[in-house]
Image (cartoon, rainbow, N blue to C red):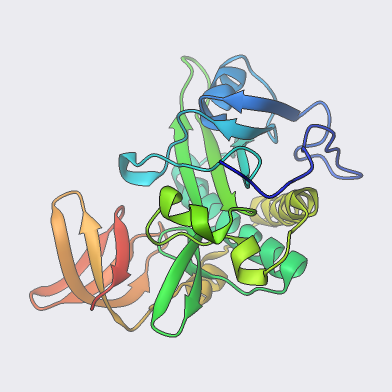
Length: 267
């Protein structure tokens, strides 16, 4: 497949900060998935703030068991390692909220586009009643015997996928190239994301709760949606999100909470 030329991220190096800075930065041209590489590093006690970046994945994963597809060199594909303090179950959902906000802010600062967050953490671009998916975020927890759990957060951001290739990625996919009509510097996007993620994580450890900002950034609050949950599809009005990130839905049978799932507008 033909891909818009993108400069390799192999020489990427942060000018300041600690998250994703040497020796915490790991670049690979091709991996099964950045999560696989990061998990191996984490189990060998690599420090918090390690970042794995790849140009291509042969078995990239999305949420709910989906496959993440992106032509080589066309996306920002990375995973970040966190070793949050206790209580882990309080910090983990807040870290996911922070990652979504940091990615949203990085895209806006770099391109001028203001994407919305689609619960739980997809980045979408809305065009009236239509929407297209720009990025996805996947979290996985890892445990090593005798050690505290760690959290891996993976990001897939469609940067340079031409319009004619989007259907091969997803029926609802878009890219920054398509939205802007011109190429975007992936290194600038990566730097902007890591800067905001690092600053937000330090605020988080100092007591900041990103829930109000995350809630405000979510698309479709107050609208009729369909939640694809493990037990089946549920229709209702999205009314709120809880401290742990669960979606609150007002259905015909009452109020329901969804800790996991996928949401779309009801047609």
